[in-house]
Image 1 (cartoon, helix red, strand yellow):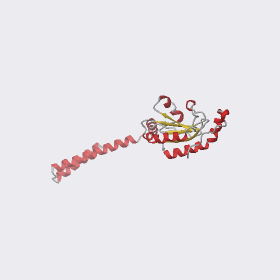
Image 2 (tube, helix red, strand yellow):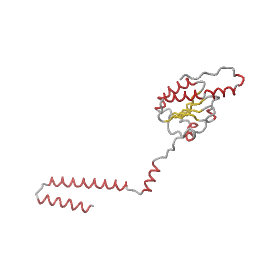
Image 3 (spheres, rainbow, N blue to C red):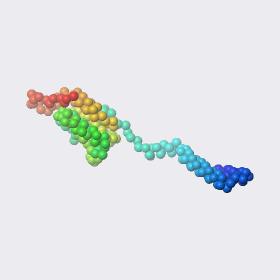
Image 4 (tube, one colour):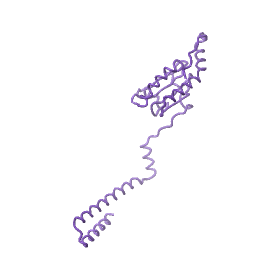
Length: 207
């Protein structure tokens, strides 16, 4: 390629000399030719770097791009850890981070929801920057914050919301689950306090 380029430049200069073209024009021609050669060299090197063996391309993709497991379905979600269980209450876990902007945005709505569903259910906000909470993240496959998981009185997951968080949708679905589990909550309280069957249960949260 370099030899052909030299011949191209020599031919061009010979033509200029034959037709009495000025030295300034000859210099411009040489500069343009050099720039053209430089672009060709850079383009050729880029193409050569892109043309790699398929096995090498796969190795690079595996080493550079981490494989993120898919989120767990409700059926796959583990039971509520014993340290977070509340007697005869639904438990809404929120995995959050203090630096998470979405968490900061939904925090007032979460606190308002906590007041609204008490004492039938409660909200536990878990900071993922704490070592104990961070150790739970692989178990529940927490890949982003905030993430909400609602558990029934038996500790089974019955509702999840992650990534795209809508406070109104979260409230609507949590209240629906609280209403649907009212009977189970009453039965749990009666069995836990058999002598207080005459005492009226807490009313359902307003819809």
